[in-house]
Length: 245
Picture 1 (tube, rainbow, N blue to C red):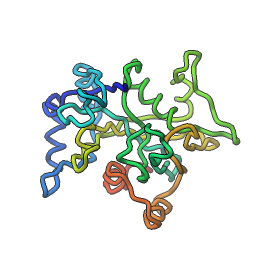
Picture 2: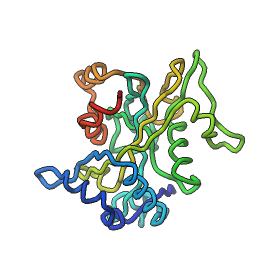
Picture 3: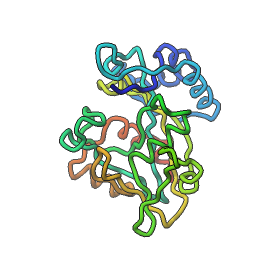
Picture 4: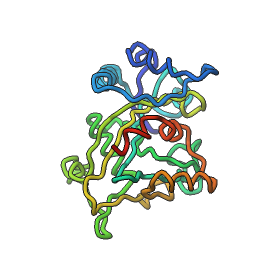
């Protein structure tokens, strides 16, 4: 079975930022929001998660995958290099062999990340682990290795390649996936011009590359369907004004 970090939804609803989230409700009353946060709001959110977290099975009789009273905390971040950002296609059921989120199969995505696992020591450990699991950083045709001697990620090494900043949250109740997940959005900027990024061959996702906004639009015009969280970020004023500043 697979456990992940969760927090009771009413604990999130008690935070000051929840009022800002609900103010962004669509006219239909459905919550579908990407919300940039101030530094103090991010600190309050992380503190609340740390103080109220528990780990529960995602599936099974008491699984949280279909129970919106528990919110699965998920990292969802954009990898940026200059004026380009990393975009990929979610794997199909045939590709991911039961791994990953099947309800998002085949969707176009910009978010790299995932669930926080019981063995993660803290937020930072989980975030960097998820990045390293899903993508590989490449220099001069060679993949860079950031693994430590214990099979984890050496954050001090990976931190020399990317700078990571948590900048907001995502809450989308318009589909079954969104109702049970709460997204922590971050930006990971590649600091070395000689370094590129690609999908790991052994991960469940498929096509992935750095694109600019015109190239991303071309992907959608050729039939690529963005997943809901990606669409929320891409349509935001924050993406247009802050990502490439």
